[in-house]
Length: 146
Image 1: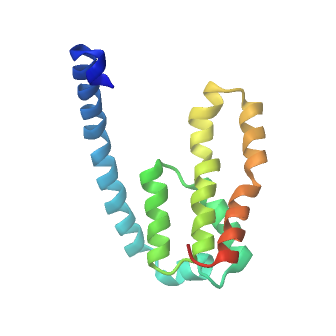
Image 2: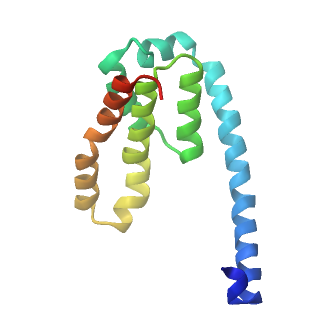
């Protein structure tokens, strides 16, 4: 599409895409390496106890709270979820963690959403979204491992 619009658009889009790529690669590397450190620091017994397959709805609730409290972008949120699965976390619990992180990351709401949208709308959006991590976990429990 950029090619069809002309050389100026093509060069500009390639330049911007390259800069985006250069900016995101270190973040991905840090997230992957950081999740490895998290896996090494947190004992597997803690993960399996709080988020393990036998933790049930208590584990889902814990995962939702942890997901909402996790700062950082998708590299951090998804990496921590992958680490939790690797060391013995239950699929429904990890799914609830990732969905809660995507919907309720408190630091993102406070730093990005509230300054650009009315606070009342942001809190209403978050309140309406509360059932979704639990629904995702319930679906994962019904169908088994995804």
